[in-house]
Image 1: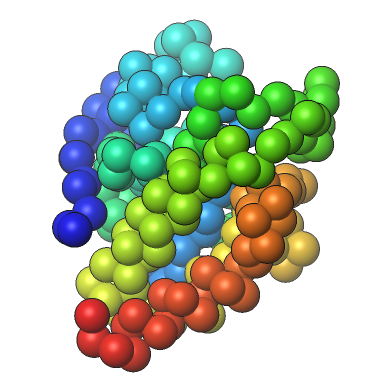
Image 2: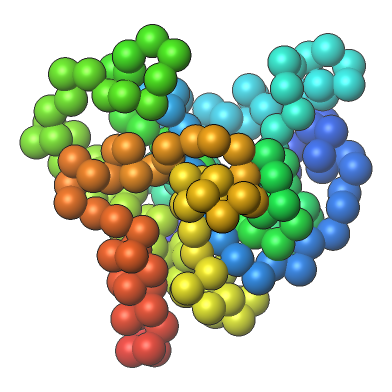
Length: 192
């Protein structure tokens, strides 16, 4: 089944208005840590201006992914504000939405009372949608799958702020960024 991508640019967001160009050579995978707010919901949340006091921070990501598909909110060739560091200069930012019912400990990336079986169907769909989008972007921009990193890895490389996503969630399903990169590479190598 083809991946559904809905394009709707956040034309009021300061990042879009600034319009800095991006020559993508990498992809950064995030997860929202805001359970239940799905891909299409983020448009109304982030299609606003920090400069005009309409939101509390300067932030913009290229796309949000959930179990239904992808909502693209910035052009792939426009610099996003998703990493809080140098990764913004060359990475397309993809946010993975988390389903309603996940609970976090206050002020942390620690999930509490998490039941992986309850959310397995959602996780598997969103994992595949993230993979499919990454494959498409790697093809379009000739990105080496080795250049796909998580926000957490971006922090460890000195390219992003200190976050734990998405591995803090993926670990419940035995998934790692190495698994993700390998699956993208396998699909690309097979010409699928």
